[in-house]
Length: 270
Length: 336
Image (cartoon, each protein chain N blue to C red):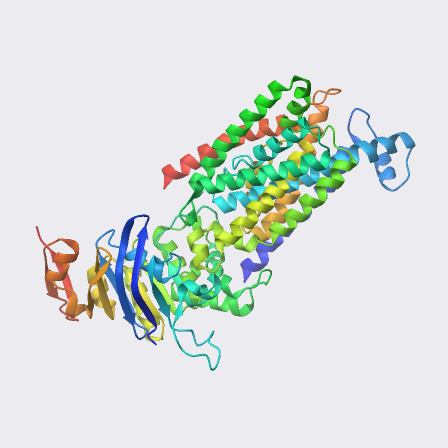
């Protein structure tokens, strides 16, 4: 059973079909980046995988987690639509691109909310929960922000706090929708390194990014989408080329190799 | 570690202070009125002694009134806190969503039909539920609920129902004063029968709402986020709206519409103890009780011996407060 398997997925907002019969199978935990023009269905795809949106046709299957699986149970994939909200939240976490906050919780409280799927109604957070939260905040370099109010943090700081909250969920699958959009270069790089490390340790990571150069440097694999379908998938050096970018984004660019890593770099020209 | 000890302490101090203040305020509210009773005498009566005259006034006129003010203040404030959290909007309260007007409409019909206390209560609850679910259905697009359309639909339906109530008042001159007093909200006619009918409902509803305190915390950071954190938001929303309707209907059917309690109190409480609903909800309840005890005391003393509806006072305070929140919200959007 692959870690993630998407079969014949279709999704429509009203009459407008956004995802067309999309198939995707990711065998092993790895760091995958989704690229594509605005409105091509990247976010919609992520939300179908997370189970938040219900596909009009097709299925999203994820491998049962070793933590939740009962012995003897056959290891077939679970349909995310048939899982309870809580068991989904224990296996899949989602970092949204929305950074609007209306209430002044501390950053620590926000990250602690990542433990929600593990806590009973009136159960208080245990020392183990606190340790998990602290680890998540240290990994994302947000432990120093823990007493600050989420409403007073900058966009980039919020995004790191949201990532910490998602890590506190201890997911098998981590979905990120433009998680770097407000971060400076330093944190973009450290966050991407972190994601790559987490993938090495067995987390399946799927991120929508816009920076093709950063994506090429860090991703194990890149998926390029256009109008609700996957047009290309493969290692960055194999698929980031002028033809694909022209087709996906309707732009003409040059591609040169990074002098150190030989990974593709996009050079725009007039 | 420092934080986890320092913060609860401050909250506990606020909590104990407001509890003390509540006891003290209740004693004052019992003693002050058209007949002044010394605090010592009030204390004696509550201890089972005291003179017959002051016993009658205290135990049969003022005590039910003060208890009902406290319970309704607490209930409306808790409902307000939940609605504000649910809609992630500090301007939400039972009135904005049309729950109060729905209950008021149901109760008006029952009054015109000559029904008793129980009938008025049931009719108010039924109409409140019907209203909030109509608002809900209007606002619902596809499988999800839009908060903006929920607020707009609430305001529209609320205006419509208020117009119907006004029309019913005009058509039934003989009942006009009764309905009018009651649309403004007053504890004037609250005796033990009303307290025994509504207080248990309001307290029970508030306790059940408290079950959703942590869920609400997560929902306050966004509905989609909440869903991704394992909260069944649609189910929680249904429960909150149901219990909010129950509490509001129980309050409105005994005293009429008392506006803005659910708007002002949770807002101030949140400034003092922060947004975590596990601490905020009990504190809001205490503040709501305090708020209505004092505004009711004002209502029956400010033009003594005449009495004005307490709803006039809460609205006089709430209107400007609403505008203040609007201006503040405007500044915030400009700032960011």
